[in-house]
Image 1 (tube, one colour):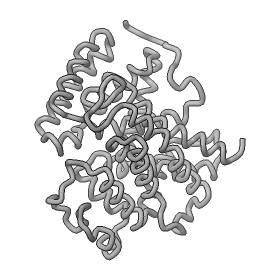
Image 2 (tube, one colour):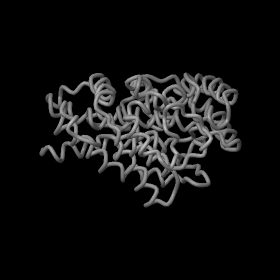
Image 3 (tube, helix red, strand yellow):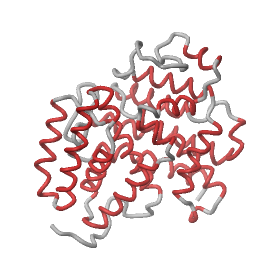
Image 4 (cartoon, helix red, strand yellow):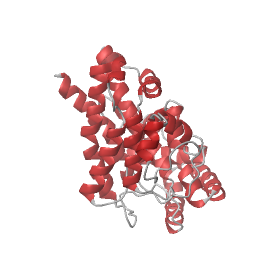
Length: 330
């Protein structure tokens, strides 16, 4: 297999997370195959997943070619995020589907390419790649990466990021001078993400070297070994993450009290689902209806689950969506 074909296959596996996460149902409060939002529909995510392959391939190729010489590049990560977001919105005509997930996937793509170039493919270590992804990001992300990321945020126009937001020493994303301010202050994308990690769990996931995504990827594997049903495993992973930490998108849009109630309810329903899918499905469906009616969207949780699926897919050689069921109590 040529190196080009090999790298492309890995890019496709990374992009799978975007399509497979949104396809699981019912994921309470989020778009899935049976629920659309006013500005975003299920198919928008499928378009984004397909269009993400080329930018992610570019990231893998950069890591493969430059490795520890990434300092030779002026842009490493930011254009991957911007171009995926911008192109997907242009082609589908919908709103933002992948700003957070693509932000998480871009460092993974570069670290993956570097690992493929430096070790035999059969010896790739997911733990090493995840650690290297945040180490490389910390060491080599650039000011122009930050500029591209600001452009991506401006393109998606999130309702929860406002001109009135206090951003300390960091330029407000809506500032007309944001490019000059980033350049003048020599703020790299790592600096932006490190600052954002104080209130955003997606940014914190990079700082924490993908600890949540890795845990969820192993959880998906364990659930598949238990019952062998892909859709159920992804929904359970979604509930698992939602039950462990407050979803910061809910906090920013709906308040901390709402986020806490969602977390507590997710924990209760997860316990039911782990015991019996039939015993939890109706409560799960009602939880989905409740959050949708209140416009409560655990979008940060969805981003992390999508990346967990991407991680899982990287090291699954076959039978991605199904494993032999080894135990069940249903």
